[in-house]
Image (tube, rainbow, N blue to C red; front, side):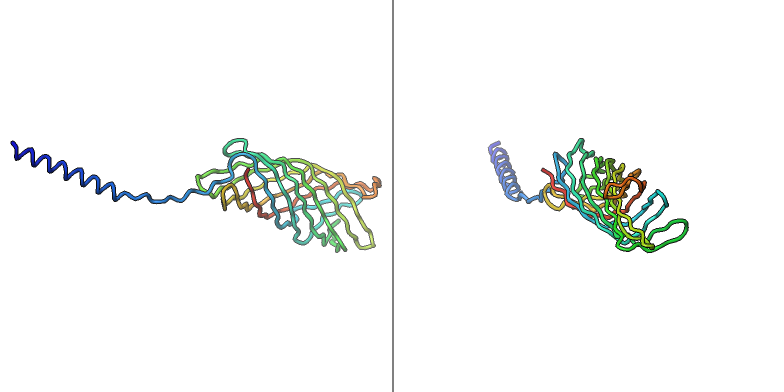
Length: 227
């Protein structure tokens, strides 16, 4: 009996020593903290990109469709997260394109010193397709008001310099990449349009009213900061 107790005590001491050695082998491995995506609270976005004419039609005494070179766009937006996936924002943006040709009645002529500018004030809704990573696709669009200003000289010479307000809209999609805590890089496509703009000459003469409908393709890159 005494021998058995000695053996049992030795075994217990051996097991306790083994457990202690095993505990010593446990090493705390540092785990990289994931980058926080800007998905809560308010945020500010700034963006810019290239613009291509999709449609630029003016109807008045004569009907014209304009074409132009690649232009540019700059803008900013302030927004907030309504839900985990839904964002609402107010956007102010401006684009400009050099007008190169005008087509009327099947005939196309060059536009000299042609310029087309648009200012957009939009209320947007974006839906983020969350996937648990720092890579977040999104889709959405917005509506609001748009201001158009076009000028140039047609053969003749017939000059034009008109401006006015219409209903503005956009649809688009893109993807956000988390680059730092609450900082996202945003790559996106937009189609921005202005319809029913009543254009008048910039000196206020309403005798040459023109109705404008137009839309632009936009490829843009932006930076979003959450706060």
